[in-house]
Length: 120
Length: 109
Image (tube, rainbow over all chains, first blue to last red; front, side, top):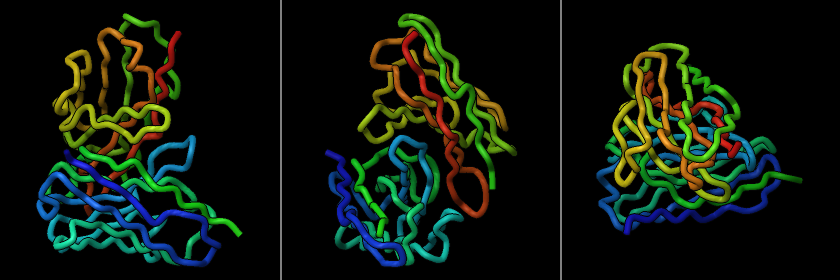
């Protein structure tokens, strides 16, 4: 079945870095755009970044631009999010999610999320 | 940046009744609008895309309408499993990106 499994979350100090991974299975990973979306527990959804199916284009939300980098390895069916210069306000559950198309449309498959806590 | 505004923030409805949720965009998004349902402790689930097309496996009691800046999600006869938080999302603007509304909590009256 179609599945996205995030890993790499945890507790990190402000100013440090963390890399999230998302392992995809059950579909042709290289045919879909992929997103990261985050959610502070008890709050709403915030889009973080998207990467197109072939990795040719990447776009970011304003709050993470210049600090986070989305990437993918289609040979490993894996999506990544490199998070640098972390701030306390980056604390959230991070969801890996599949676009319904190759680029940027709606999101049809979501992982279960990984919690990132930025705290000293 | 396109801002998505959902109303009301909380909606109290009795089971079996109809629920109507609204989403407004700060500028036209054509019909590039999706709706999601999220239950506590779960990831969101896609309900509607293209403003009015039900996603795979979504019951017919869920329907979406609207275009441009005004959109509506209607649940025709509420079931117990429908009480959740609902988000709208646009994907129309350039550069390509996504914006979510702040959510509407649908609770049992």
